[in-house]
Image 1 (cartoon, rainbow, N blue to C red):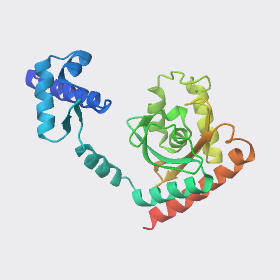
Image 2 (cartoon, one colour):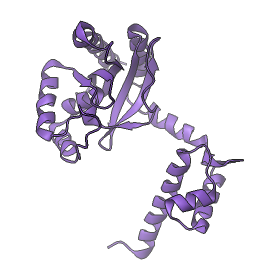
Image 3 (tube, helix red, strand yellow):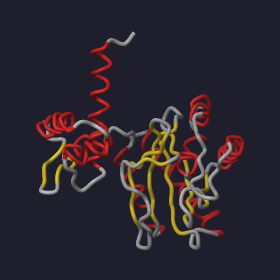
Image 4 (cartoon, rainbow, N blue to C red):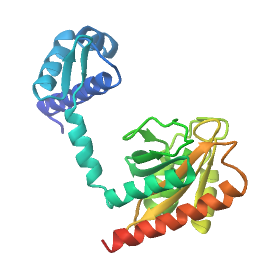
Amino acid sequence: MTSRSEHGGVQAVRTMFDIIEYVADRDGATITEIATDLGYAKSTVHRHISTLKELKYVAETPDGYQAGLRFLEIGHSARQRQQGHGMVKEKVEDIANETGERAQFIVEEHGEGVYIHRAFGERAVRTDPGIGSRIPLHATSAGKAILASMDEQRSTELIEALEFDPITESTITESERLYDELETIRERGYSFNRQENLKGLHAVGVPVLGPDGDVIGALSVSGPSHRMQGEWFEEDLPKLLLGTANELELNIAYS
């Protein structure tokens, strides 16, 4: 049974992270704004903000409090621990330069896709929310490539936990349809996203496997649907990504 002090400790942690996430989403937030919007007492917010400021996780500005640059240190450390970090970054940049579009590398964490690397070609559209942002696995090419390549038990657990809320008119909203598509992805080795996460955007994704055969993440290229179509989209981009993923897997295995 959870003790009173343990419960209070857990709640205090939740409160602090509520405040951190609120501050991180804004250019500046006052204690009054934080307390009002989150429904906490001003004294509670003040205590947490004071502690976060002392630890350099928030900074005070004329407009209120902002997320501190200390988070950069933590984010950099987390990304550096990703397998093949440097090699993946280089390949993402190569893909963006060769295609002229946006390229990215995404990993799975807590059932969501997380942007680890991205690069922009000369005609790329900047539609993604940025490094560290989370996206639904079932509605993205990289996410579906990851789901199709991971351990079947883990994949099933993630799929069964999905709510399948429609993001666009093209989003997959049924588990059976997703299972069928993942089987197709396994057979051909790559996945497509046709306006499933953002209207007007298409993408191609391929998984990247580690030396033990487990999926590390996925490479993908995305761009406007009027450019991402025909042979370029259906054949050329998949070949490019599959070749890049193969090189990357070999480099990681023998580095």
